[in-house]
Image (cartoon, rainbow, N blue to C red):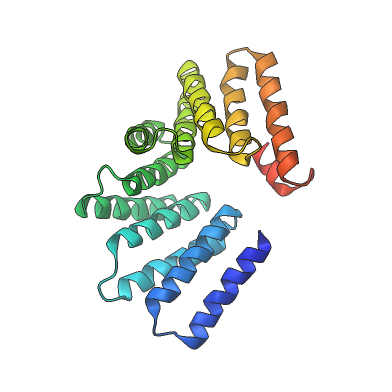
Length: 239
């Protein structure tokens, strides 16, 4: 929430004052702040924080390239939300190259990078490339944690791309799988479950199953109302 982001901003300022030469610590604080800003849909500040974090990581002697790739994934997502697509694609490409160079081809880290790059492709409207990256990310996730919340998130992203491509039955099946994994791994009223329910309603509606689509939308709204105030921006954004 805003209180946590304020604390993260205060930590960044304190590090800037007290230990400006400790660039690795400042980069970590900026990355934490950028991730919180991204979650809060503050995409401009998130991009600025992540750009600084990336630059500082590269200044550090012997920096961890995998951590740099994590930063680049977050930067790519923020830039894509700002419609700075060429920069987002460049950040994703750098992260992917690092993963391959350090041998992360089948790791959770590579799955994160593929998912981030898939999101950039989707926001650019390049659904075939988005689908290819997300399908590979799903394969990795299923090998290392088939009942993990991140697996549900990746399945949901892939289902959304299939729905955008007009592959409605396949999208429905994947989104049902995402909901099953989420319900098995998250608390019953978790906001992620509401988001997946909302996404499942879309192909059902296009397939003509209006009754089930409406029931899913109502269930999603009920979960959001349990989690947030009824007029919270999160409900307006997601529903």
